[in-house]
Amino acid sequence: MSNTLKIARKEFTDLIGNRLIIFIIFVYLFLIAKTIYDFHTVTPENIKNGNLAMSLLMGLWYILTVYGTLVGIVLGFSSISSERKGNALNTLIVKPVYRDTIINGKLIGIFGFIICLFGIATFIYFSVLLIFYGNYIGAIILNILVRLLFILFLSIIYVMIFFIPINASIYNN
Image (cartoon, rainbow, N blue to C red; front, side, top):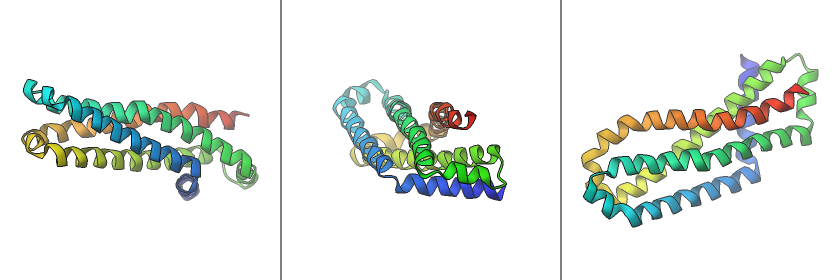
């Protein structure tokens, strides 16, 4: 288990230091800002109709799944290219480490990275919306928080589906 966690830590730090991933995160944050702006232009209709909680959660779902899918695909290809470029995979396979340990470590590292990214995205999304619409959201905050964990869980599973086949294909050769 310690080898798996070492590989997960290595994968997490490699992703944080990767320039492509940092660029994709900035694009992701820009798309969050765009979605918040779009929500800001449509909000008066949602407040009148009483659909504010559903609109907030659907906006977050859209950000996490649609844009997050692109992040998951980039994470998969980035992890493969960094392994092939640095020959780290050959070094790991020569040592007495099982292939399953490598795959599980990489998946745990990516899973932790996606959880951090989605946590930051959710925090930014709701922080900006609380600044603009705090008096409206205050009445429905409990309703939003109950459904928020479910949305985060489903979004992470959805994005990991796009990452797993890309990453597992390297180890079948």
